[in-house]
Length: 374
Picture 1 (tube, helix red, strand yellow):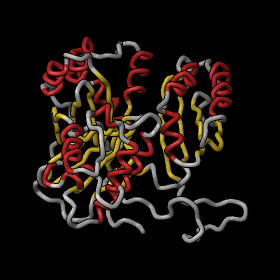
Picture 2 (picture 1 turned 90 degrees about the vertical axis):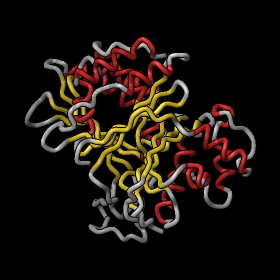
Picture 3 (picture 1 turned 90 degrees about the horizontal axis):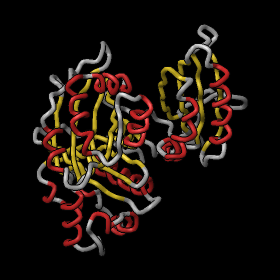
Picture 4 (picture 1 turned 180 degrees about the vertical axis):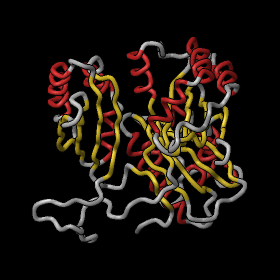
């Protein structure tokens, strides 16, 4: 059944994935790049879920190149692109490439030998219907700070001046939400238009650079933002991609509150846990009695963060707030969740443990800022 709620972003629709990487090479770096690509091609070919890739060179500008790859679905690609293995694989390309731009697309329609121009929805694989959204892209970063520095870091992050929302004629920042869970920081952004352009715009703003420099001494992972390689590695490791965004078709209530919930998964179970919560949030979008109006799921490795806009307090309906409604859902979450890491062990079938999980998963809000007119 197709949910009535609007799913504007999803890694779980079952469709094949097309990844497009645009590259601008330094002058004279073509052969070095080709050697690096050949090494990368052989390594990527062994990654589960990878189907094929192509390397293309512009017929108009010899420094502009294009790499396209096809994957069985989004989850295996996201698992690989956010891995340490990926960082090592692409490292030889860094000295060849002036600029890159990555785009990911679900394959919804396809023509080819023996294939109809219009696929039969009853037999076509993957998703047939296009998603409907609000024109926003969502992304998050997460990193940890040294234990004992949490209050100082929270003070620094709460006190920054918001950068200019307008990036260019088509791109603007909509909202920035910042939370902490212990010594883990999560910064989520909503962008109208070009996400990469917005992230680069923010990184260049003096007020943002000042905050980044101020928290540098407290980070568990050292970084030097003046060094492109150090900055690239840090932000690649900090990336926390959005894997689903869903919003109910119900009218938007005036009293929505934003919360972030942290779900540490058992080793190797992060994507499975995110998929479970995605299904729950799709069901909530169809439930006229659900307090959850919208949800964005972010996942990387065994870190899952669920950003929800909800009516009323979380503890008015802990089961709905946690995404546990329905038969056996608590048991499924218990199987995937690293309860010890979040301080909640034992059965989630008990009200006491559900309430404890809600209390322990609820992240500390640091700042939540919407751009004017949003």
